[in-house]
Image (tube, rainbow, N blue to C red; front, side, top):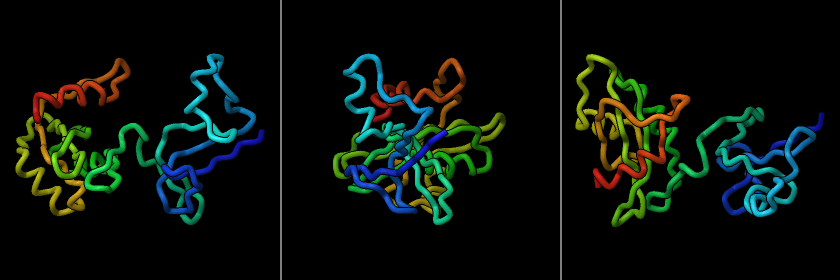
Length: 173
């Protein structure tokens, strides 16, 4: 089987190792098009299938997953990947789950809003999470608001329903 993958920058040029971009694939086992022609418009680039996944290749050509293109946001001109922030938040003692979505910001354009679910019996405050973020995240990656909650909406398979969280932001802005 023939299978190839490349990493493409947001400006449609190929990314070198170490630079984040969208994963594009092509090969014998990859679809060449959708039955409905209108679905093909943004799904392909010069014969490559656009996966919607943000990745980078390291110097040994190992692929590292960063997040989804649709979830990335720009804060003050910087690309922010919610998965990176969620991994950082989930490492805090007493955090069960976290989810970061973008919301409007009057100066930076967009900013992060973090929903944090503590482990059962843990007492976590938004202030302590905010202080933790200041220690280990660049300024532009720090969520503007930390929302400590008992749970986050989930899909039928248990994944965090980010679109629902995005819609609920109006209650917190």
